Every structure is written in structure tokens, then in C-alpha cells.
Amino acid sequence: MNGSVLPEDVLRDAPSFTPRPYELADLELLLSGAYTPLTGFLGRADLVSVARTGRLTGGESWPVPVTCEIPGEVASALDPADPARRTLVLTDPEGAPVAAIEVTDVWPTGENRFGIGGPVRRMGDGGHGPFQRLRRTPEEVTALLPPGRVLGVIADRPLHRPQLAQIAHAARTLAAHLLILIPVSGPGPDGLPPEALVRSIFAARDRMPPATVVAVPLLTRGDELRDALLRARVAGAYGVTHVLSTGDSLSGAGLRVLLPRELAYDNRDGQWRWRDDIPPRNRRLAMSPGEIDDLLDRGFPLPEWHTPPAVARELARVRPPRRHRGLVLFFTGLSGSGKSTIARNLADALREAGDRTITLLDGDVVRRELTAGLGFSKSDRDRNVRRIGWVAAEVARHRGVAVACPIAPYDAARKAARQMAVEAGGGFILVHVATPLEVCESRDRKGLYARARAGQLRGMTGIDDPYEVPADAELSVDTTTMSVAEAVDVVLNFLVESGWMEPKLT
Ligand SMILES: Nc1ncnc2c1ncn2[C@@H]1O[C@H](COP(=O)(O)OS(=O)(=O)O)[C@@H](OP(=O)(O)O)[C@H]1O
Ligand SMILES: Nc1ncnc2c1ncn2[C@@H]1O[C@H](COP(=O)(O)OP(=O)(O)O)[C@@H](O)[C@H]1O
Image (cartoon, rainbow, N blue to C red; front, side):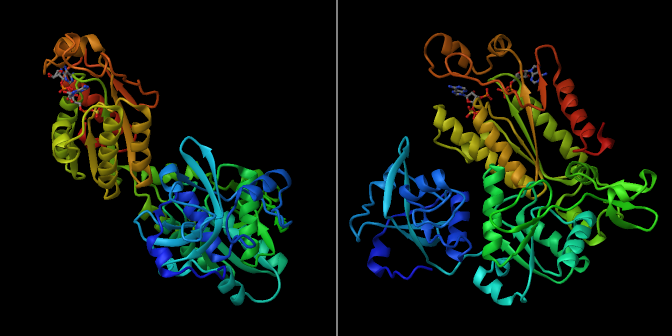
């Protein structure tokens, strides 16, 4: 989007780097022109100016920092003063080039981390992924919009009848054309993958006034005010004149903001209207996201008074009842606590039930097939647990059950495994096998504890290596006095009670 042309040999020799997901999302918006007037990642002077005054050094208002960070190894290959050494190729997670940045500014931001600023220029074929055709630029979209007001709706959740009624009402009141912006960088607030969100919005299209739909790689930064300002900025770039504030998100940045009244369902005539206009005995309030999730989890249809059937069908497809969803059962505990024994027996019980395919990621097999060559340093254990978590999440993505049983002594690595499973649309159940060290040590099936006590083995978990007791385990079992069958039953009962398994098994 900026006019500079880089010689091919500069690009060919330039180092490359994959930014983090939110930086890639910002990059996409910079390249599309949605962050106009920005043409690249901000340098130091602009960042200071934005933080102090809400304006760029050039005087234009701009609400948030738009930054890119690189590690020291990459920074050391760059020199903003040397035209042959100031280009960095930015790639997507698969390694495909997305853009080149001409780095005008490099500065330290933390331990071995550096900020870079400078204009960006698109490379490659402009990206890929589901619904790419909806990722239109502001220029393409504004050319299509009819003259007059444009009502912007940032649809980060599926649209049920109350939201659809609000949208219809606002569009009618303003006599505005409707522009739906769907954030598509990663899972939304309900955890839906972006393509499922897009499908659910399209399923509601015949319940909306004529609308233009655009997918934008907007990510939230966890700062409500800044997120709202940035969203409004992007909406403005797409030609929106009025924003409908949905849910609890604020809005602003120069656009008119409509704060819709809370609507309720009037069972006298099946209309949605302002809740205070309906006598209490005739009104039904809109369901909360939690209530909607709960119905989906249990496999109940979303009621027609609340959700158009086509939307309900899409949601039921992406969120089948828990008993049909992918699941990761993750056992953690000291060596000898009973993880493998319980996991193996549990996997057998699940196979007998036959509802879903079962993948047992047992310790010995994993360290032979998946993580051969890794040892027991913190970084090797983290890598081991991460690979297990990754494979388990893929199993869950395909609606199977993965049963894993590494020691997994570090909380952060377990949390990463949980996040991968959840982002793959699966469940994650952490079972802490909390058998005390004395008991594990007395079992000492492999003689490792004895060797550790004798000083012949270093870094044994529980002896001279840490085990971080989980505070987020769904279940805790202590096998000191429990039989294997009892331990397996505890887990099976939990699965049935929480809806992850058909009751027939018990
Ligand atoms: N230093 C040290 N600390 C702990 N455990 C050790 C160590 N060296 C070898 N072993 C054997 O390796 C098994 C643990 O491997 P994991 O893959 O489960 O460990 S980790 O999650 O990567 O920490 C573990 O097997 P289990 O007894 O089945 O847990 C041990 O037998
Ligand atoms: N309730 C129980 N659950 C699991 N294992 C038990 C139980 N009671 C006794 N054990 C014994 O404890 C040992 C646990 O070993 P293992 O399952 O390999 O532990 P880990 O995988 O945690 O290292 C086995 O010898 C097993 O027979």
C-alpha cells in the first residue's frame, strides 16, 4: 500500500520472521488499509506520542499502539541505516511470506526482545484460509456501499433473535445500509472457530435487512476501551457511520454509537420489543451465552422463540453435545502415582463402550515414537508435554478421545495443553493423580527413586526436581488405598455426570 519498491535481491537475502498471532492480525489490517492512516508498525516516537496524546507525531489521532516484536537473533541482522539490511520478511505460521517491513526503528523492549517500526508492503498472493473472499479491503467495500448512512455491527457472536431484532430496528430507524463485520482472527468470545461464526451469521441472513458482510482479522487485546476504539476505527475505515454496540462492548472514535435497549420476547404476539413494554408474565428474556452453551453441551435444541432454526443447526453442528465432542483426558502426577495404570484401564473401558475412537498416549510409547531423544530437563519436559498436548488436541479436533499420562510437572505446560484442546473444539479434563511421594517411592517399580536417593540419578521429579501441584484439576485421585478399578470408576462417573459420556456405561 505504500509506494516503495524493494529490489528482488534485497528481498531474497532478507531475514524472515513469523510474528505472533495478534501482530499478524494487525499486519493484515495495515496491509488492507483498515488501519489508515497507518502504513506500518509504529516506531518509538509515534508510540510515545500515542501513549501521551492519542495522536501520531504527524498530528492525526490514533487510539492504540500497533507494534511488532522480534527476538535478538533477528534484530541483530537488521540495520535501519543500511538500505540493504533494513528489510525483514514477515511470514505466516506456515512460513509463507505475507509482507516485507522496511525497518526504520529498532529498540529494546525486554530481555532479548526488540520492537521494530516501519512501513509494510504486501508479498505473496494475499493470503489463504476459509472464507478468504469475505476478507475485502475497505476500498473494495466502500465502493459497493450505497450512499447515506451505514450501520456497522461487529458480529463476534452468533446472531440470535434478540440481536437480529435490534439490528432490524436500528437499521430501520436510521434508514441505514447494514454492514456486518465478522472478526475472524482466532476463536471469538464464545470459543467458536471463525469459520463456524461466519456460517452462523450467514444462517441468519434472511432475518436481516440487506447487508454487506466483511471478515476482518480483528483481535481483542483485553483492554475494553482500546479494543472498542480500535474496532470503531476499523469500522470507520470500512465506511460505517453509526455503530450498533452489541453485548457489553463500548464504542466510539468519532462514530455515532447506538446503545440498543434490552429487548425481550413477548409471548402474546411472538415479537421482540423493549422489555419494559411487556408485562412480566408475558415476557421472556434473551438467553445469556452461558445458557446457550449449556443447552448445546447437553444436546438440547436451541428454542425457536430465541434462535432461528438455521442458526441453531449451525451451532449444533460446531458444538455437538459433550458426549459426541472430542475430549482430552490428561493425567498428571509423580512417577509411580498410578497414571499409566489408571489411563490404560480407563482407555479399555472407553473402548468397550465404543462411542468414540480412543488414542492412548502412554508414556513409554510417547517417548519412543513422538519425543524420542528428549531428556528430563525443564525445556525437554516442556517440549515433551507440548507435543503430547498438540497430538491430543488434534485427536479431539476429530472428535476422538485422547488419554495422556505424562508426569507433566509444570503448570504452564499443562495449561498450554488445555488451551490447544479447547481451541480445537474439544474438552480437557485434568486428573491429578495425587498419590503422595512416600507411597510412590515405596512402590518404586523401576528403582528410580532408590537411585535418586543414592545420588546416582539427578533431576528426579519429587526428589530433586519440581512438581507443581495443579490448582485447576477437574479431578484428584489418591491411589494410596484405592484399587485401580475404584480409581477408574471415579473418572468414569465424573465423565457421565459432566455429560462427556453416555450414562449407560456405569
Ligand atoms: N529424572 C526423571 N524424572 C522423572 N521421571 C524420570 C526421570 N528419568 C526417567 N524417568 C522416567 O520417565 C518417565 C516420565 O516421563 P514423562 O514423559 O512422563 O515425564 S515428563 O512429563 O516429561 O516430565 C517416568 O515414568 P513413570 O514412572 O511412568 O511416570 C520415569 O520412569
Ligand atoms: N489405585 C491404583 N491405581 C493405579 N495404580 C495403582 C493403584 N493401586 C496400586 N497401584 C500400583 O501403582 C503402580 C503405579 O504405576 P504406574 O501406573 O506406572 O504409575 P505412573 O504411570 O504414574 O508412573 C502400579 O504398580 C500399580 O499396580
